[in-house]
Length: 157
Image 1 (tube, one colour):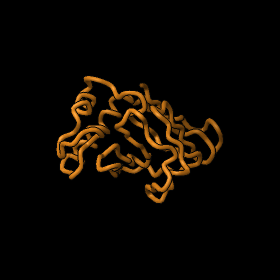
Image 2 (cartoon, rainbow, N blue to C red):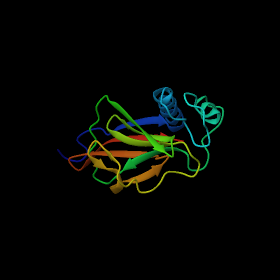
Image 3 (tube, rainbow, N blue to C red):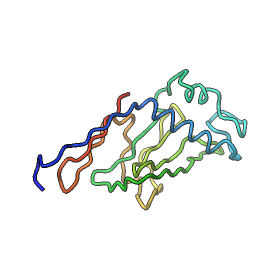
Image 4 (tube, rainbow, N blue to C red):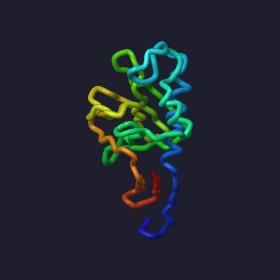
């Protein structure tokens, strides 16, 4: 194959809607957990009220809270129709969740102080996330095939 022998596929995604979808999914998957969803909240089985407002689109995440892409140059992406989830627990509260969605790794962090970086000791699909970078509100993902650009995902925030 030579450069220019195919059309680069381009996809547009609304980042705010995607972020809210991840939050709604986290809440639904954790609602029956034996831990509160969010710090400074003690009620088990009910998410913190500000998280419900964010999921409903009534307010945005603040400061370092929100959706992070977990990336590393050369990271293999197995883009299949798959979703996996693992809650991030600290001090007996759910403070976020690790998602793998269509082969891409994401961290939805619920707290304004932002996630710890790097994510040492955390593995997803045999990938050591301590070797990865967290990109807050990533705007673009390029996929290459045999050294040539094949797909572009553009995320508007």
